[in-house]
Image (cartoon, rainbow over all chains, first blue to last red; front, top):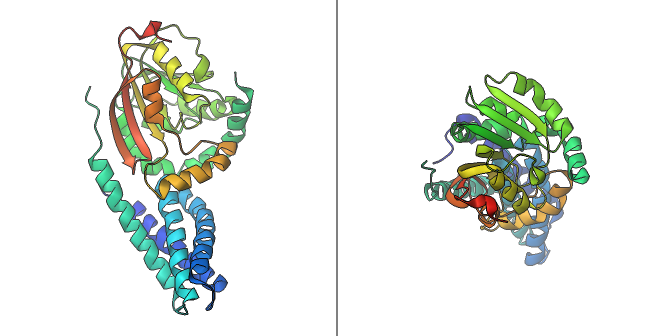
Length: 126
Length: 208
């Protein structure tokens, strides 16, 4: 039930890790030490969502439509929130790596949810 | 014919293959091949678009491919001509079919009812032109029940519907509302991309 075709697995990984890294780096430029934590998280989520939407549109040309857009946009919001929270609380080290890790975690979660949903579907029997 | 919808898809035809022709079609290829392998008898395919799906049709079938957009059908013609079977293309709105009741054994759709305005009306027309017991097999994307996907799909729909499909429809419910018996729903990706299998109940021609 998992996607097993290497082209798409690698594409999913690159798309999500790449988007997470770009979002992490961008949010670290925006949010600084001294921001209120909720504001840092919210700004990170919004910026991350916008950046990831643009990146997902490009990646979807190669690797699939909704299979790319949904996890990459989720990655953008999650990575943006995480990096925004860290930056606001003064620990802004390696934001791109933190964003990329968030992307891999989001992708893993969507793979697991997808497998569970597909296992629960009903097949056509004529 | 709905001129607004026709113009929208005429415009979309220019970039349709660029946007959808590589990644999405390769990703969905195994599912579409399996779905279209069910084709038998006299088949109506709504909406055939630029004919991207023709590559997945099994050979030697009798298919009528319809679409509201003339530009889409222009792009589909070479692919239809190369199909090793009978594949006729017609420009017609799925909500206003001029085929008699019970003209087809099966109806197929592929990313169609994300885009048809008044989808239940279009599905009712498909039900009308199907024989009693005729089958509807759909490959469709819909909204989601799960956060954050449902939120994203709702937020993107006001923009996406200007250029193409709506992303938040409940097509399974629409199929049931149109009077079909939904027999199976097979997820392809999450609860968003799915294959829907339904049957037109016997004696349906007199239904509204």
